[in-house]
Image 1 (tube, rainbow, N blue to C red):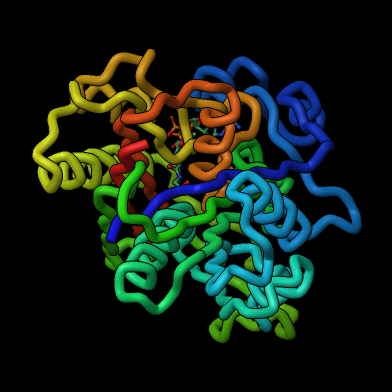
Image 2 (cartoon, protein in one colour):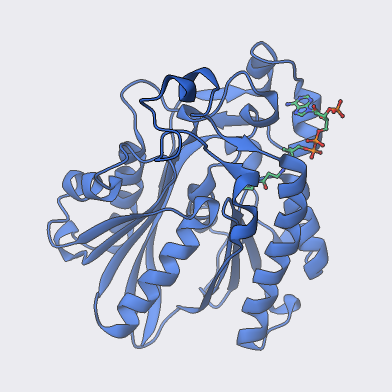
Length: 326
Ligand code: UT7
């Protein structure tokens, strides 16, 4: 059984926050943000917009492309670290919005690797016969857990969602492999300390010490990210007996232009074979790869038979890869 991507979709807030606007919020500059990260602007949810808003719209667009009705979806997996609520799963809210009444739905917390972890699980559901049509979504409203007083992190993140429909097929393009990895030894280098059972939102200390916001040791995370993304990419290539020269397009998690360039360089891939859009969206965590895949597809960048290498890295640490024969 092959597992095919039959539809892609994405949804982003209309509101744009530029580096120039950030200069007025914290002690930073367009020059620093551009040279250290490659980011020029990011999208920010406005009042009344939630993770479920963008997740559902991205999912609706992916289903429209696939020609699949909501009732045909057997499973919805939503990668997110910024759910609408601690519970129920935002995937349940998305199921309701879409009218995907026959779908089992759950959230998956794997930070920036959430979408590829979701693809890996969906692939196994389909191959085992437990599901026929699966909606995998990565969606975040990170702007609600970003500390707008912390220049180390607030310049990096943005909001949005991307989605794919996966279906079983006897032929056609297919997912050749998925690999997921975890290294829990470094969980405290990138995390949100507050609002869980250790530092409850009900404890005034959680608010006073700003524990509800993202904390990151950026420099350490950077070094791990480059090594881990290379490992995940090489595992995908080895498994399929492919060389970097066989890859038509690398679609990496969009965290930092320098991480993407270093990963591509280690793999020996020229920039013409690397998809980037982080200059427009910043780091949208689990949403970054499906947004990129949807944009590449709708821009006509992808040709049948292309070998796409998707690689993610995020808090946990989690990292993952997928090799797709388009
Ligand atoms: O998505 C999941 C994974 N996340 C990542 O992969 C993010 C990984 N990390 C990074 O992308 C980079 O480490 C950052 C972009 C976060 C930071 O870049 P860096 O080159 O590692 O800078 P740094 O943290 O070593 O800081 C260098 C200097 C510091 O000043 P001093 O101590 O040298 O005086 C920072 O205070 O840059 C300063 N700095 C800033 N200056 C202006 C940090 N943030 C800013 C800022 N504007 N926004």
